[in-house]
Image 1 (cartoon, helix red, strand yellow):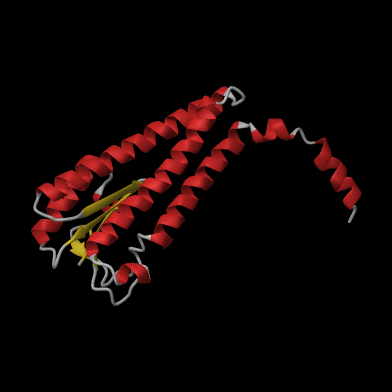
Image 2 (cartoon, rainbow, N blue to C red):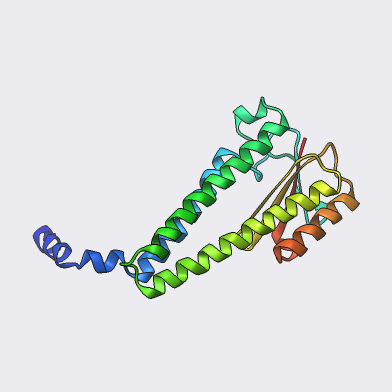
Length: 194
């Protein structure tokens, strides 16, 4: 291999233009949001793996899974702590994504297309946050003690504290999530946390 030729080509690249290009900024934003979702999944919202924690995964108005695992530190904590940690992790992820998008939108060096995409992404995040808040409030108004909603990438997960969801309760939660998020029923998962 000719490393000196490769090294010369790398030096010839206009890095400022590459780093401020619209595609590069979009890819970075998508990677940041994806990393936040992975961090949330690992740190506090493992709602899709089977364990002995006593929670059930519900979706499409029927039981679709059996048990949900959470971090070992959360297994020992009460369900109130689980919900508090889930909300904190969700907020940290959103704050990091929002800060990155605001930096792009406010930067005088950003290309107009990148600013426009960042502003659209900010608007989408705000819409998701509003949908989550509305879902949580409306589910609590139905008599549930705790609820955390996570809306992202055309999917919605609703985690509810319950000792056993009845079919009509699942239907109520599903209806609320569909109406508030605009996501169809197949994209909504209802998770029961004891």
